[in-house]
Image 1 (cartoon, rainbow, N blue to C red):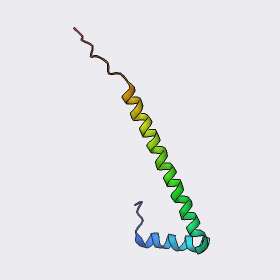
Image 2: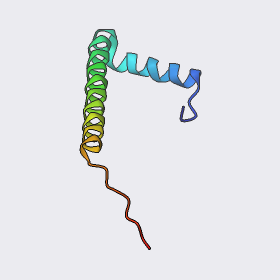
Image 3: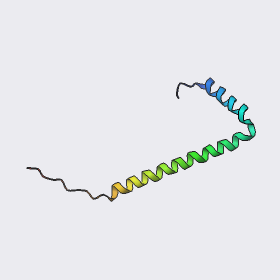
Image 4: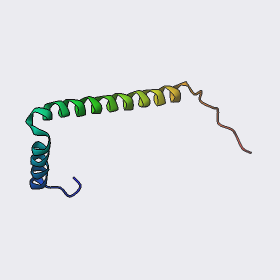
Length: 66
């Protein structure tokens, strides 16, 4: 994952904990979770629209070239 190992991730998490404090972390995690959920829902919506438009297209008969 981008060349980051476990020790680097732990250092990053400790720095975030120091900067924002333990009281803000649950709020931030909740906001990030909602953002990810909204993004996934948006992707599903776009994917569904794409599949719907593909299904609506009428198949064209092959053209014989002689």
